[in-house]
Length: 417
Image (cartoon, rainbow, N blue to C red; front, side):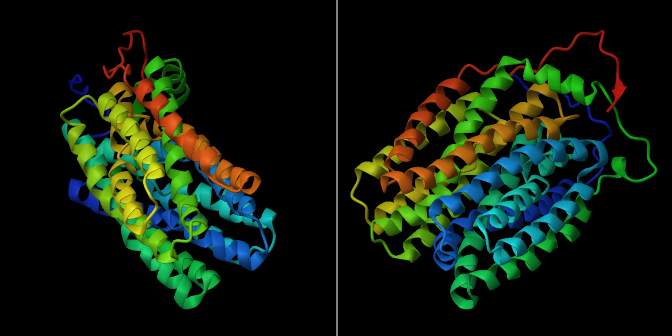
């Protein structure tokens, strides 16, 4: 069992109702992540319409994941310093612009800049790092892992809800028009962000005084071995889920399965991940989070291996999707709860952004290598094998993580962030 979390060194006492934080935060994550999880449905329509290769599309999504990771660090810093509200509104605007650019781009370079850089920056400002910062500050430590599980489950429900909607929009209106409709829908994040407007960050109020500056917190975490192990494990998470999420539809088509099998599989991943992420959040209040993470990575490797060995049928795909769904984003609540438990919540969005940056480097490689190696070899076999091997490595890396709150010397002086 892990040690109980240390009381948070909050900059100000929680002041937003927990129900409001969870409702608005979950709705934002559901919308942002739900749209993003359906991007694999555009791979074939866009490449066929534009005459591009799968590598062109994969490269843009790889850039998107890397952009998300890089901008996530700065989005976390800004959210910790000025509050989540302003970051979320900016993120919503960038998301809409990126989706419009995705629809109207006529060259691979423009596609990479809009679909990649713009949407990646938008996701950094509208997903977990920013939302979890609010949860960390506004939800008591004894309920924090559960609350993070609720938010992650909402992102999964967004996949279950929106992926079929995106498929319907493509079939009914065309791939370009579908993206323009989503660009309008994503602007709903801005009014939802009003519910996460924390009084301690309101204009005219004194900014919080924290135990550490940003750079002190960053130096402390980067030198801490358990933080390094957590980042390395999260790299594998990104590699696995983004490779599968983007390339599974094409893999199934290569094996002559109908398109609806892929969209159903992605929806099932989202549905079962609602259960998986919520369960991970609840279990994180009772069990060692490092053991939960090690089990998830080990189970992913086993599930992928059995999927590749079994005869490929619609029902084997659906079973694989259900199992992977339980394991999909279930790494998110224990990973972020560990960061809060070890380092406190004052710089949670920033430190969570650094951990997520590692995740996004893995995502970059997973989606890009999927397209590159498929174009070179004609199959996804090498990348599937990498996904299995890396899962075993991640399980071993998470097992020795020290979950105890870090002990800081009495000589530290409180400084303004």
